[in-house]
Image (cartoon, rainbow, N blue to C red; front, top):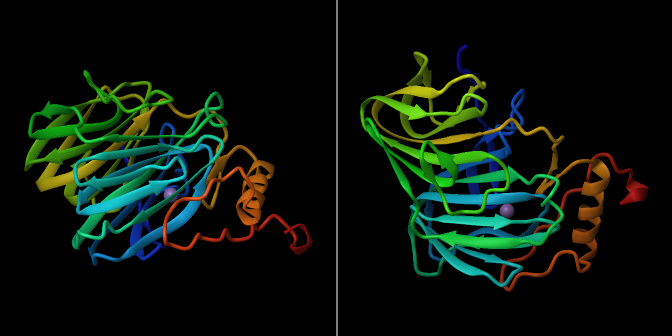
Length: 292
Ligand code: MN
């Protein structure tokens, strides 16, 4: 059993260049994790528009910064500055709208990772929610530490609301060998954010997704110098996930309904109090021009 390595795809979100590690072919989900964009490092001016108001359904957004600050606003009325080392967790449920902006006072480097978790059927049409966690638990490792953002790693659990069995943790490693505790019935993936790792003797570079199939009770990693990496994992997600634009659902019809609500600005998506313009949805490719 060896690690499966997938290259990232370059993409642009708002004003930022990102490395998209998930979803990729053949790997669409890891546990319930369905999206991973490593953004920056980029130089941020005080008034940079990151991304204007846009909707989500059926997912949780997990925002984690390595460097810098940003201002999160959403349709729940949340206005929350996030700084490096803190967690923003937004639960979309039936529908939420958010923007991410410069704080107006911070200028400098911005680097982070934007992750999505597919919500299970029990909660994906339920109410939306937002949590900010300024302090997160750490698990000490042989040659560094893991900060647990969501879920459980070894004996360490985050207080953030997880809706399926999973973990999202940042590994902050010094040079050398480290063992990370895993659950044999879960699948995992590692995304290097800074530095370089070796797993099963294979080098894993910045942006690449290193996928680990179920069957391991520990992960042996060799850090080449100091490294920061995301570890994502969970019970393989058994529900079919259909992703399009900012929506996670089970069918094209569900996504069409969300698309129409956003285009027609009906009451499914509440507006966000911000000066930034809302982002229009592209037309779903499965709709003919008369159906738009
Ligand atoms: Mn978003």
